[in-house]
Length: 308
Ligand code: NCD
Image 1 (cartoon, rainbow, N blue to C red):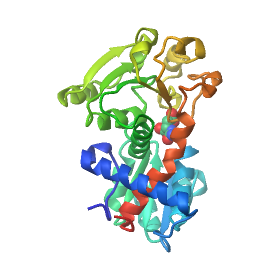
Image 2: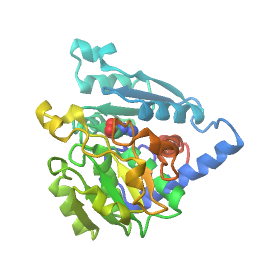
Image 3: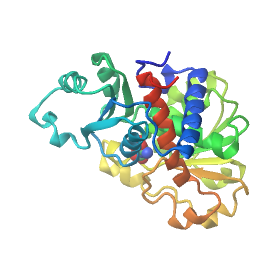
Image 4: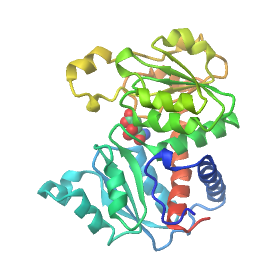
């Protein structure tokens, strides 16, 4: 049952749940090819509460709700809300749910989305909580992989960059454990994937290789998922300076890659992918951005109970 469900962590979902979201997204994407806007969510209101910066996640949720025929309210900056006056998250959520049918929240603190879901009677969707989870990004990443490769099983996938603080790779690696893949975790020593996640993945049977040497493994990969070093999560600026600019993907490096290698990035990028790569056949990160709309339409439609 999807109606009324919260979307907080990828761990809360089975493979069947995930596949259902992807199938629903595909169905909605096809419907959009025939009609510009649908009316499944007519009369429904989405509230977007962004306590942290966002471009893609917020705008694609808003676009998705409009494409479903619904309406959107919300704030893009907590400083314009009563949070600035000292209101608690609990009170903010209790208030916003009087005005809306579904809430999307992004917050710098791990666990904030879970708290919001406990307080609210209406569905709450986590759009990123600190360095913890970003489940809707993961679903659009899986949708993109399926679309580009026609499958997920059998792929050799590299996750590159900030595997310690990056919430996108925490959620994504947990979801990939449902599939028969090999995972290359490529990061500076200081930014390795948390041990508890690696142990959990190994227990689920994922083959994992850890390295800091991208050049050594680039030729093996079918997919390289690049991430930004999450500067804002470092407790100490000096630590950030040690790893800043650790990897830069450019065309010279890609000369060693497989012909069919595809490069994804949740974006925003800083300097980890040289803009010259954008035109190469490997780059699919802007097509990945597009997937945000059908996948978030599916999530909104399912949790609102207006699509099956
Ligand atoms: C990511 C995030 O917010 O975690 N961005 C996104 O949602 N597309 C990645 C990042 O900020 O580096």
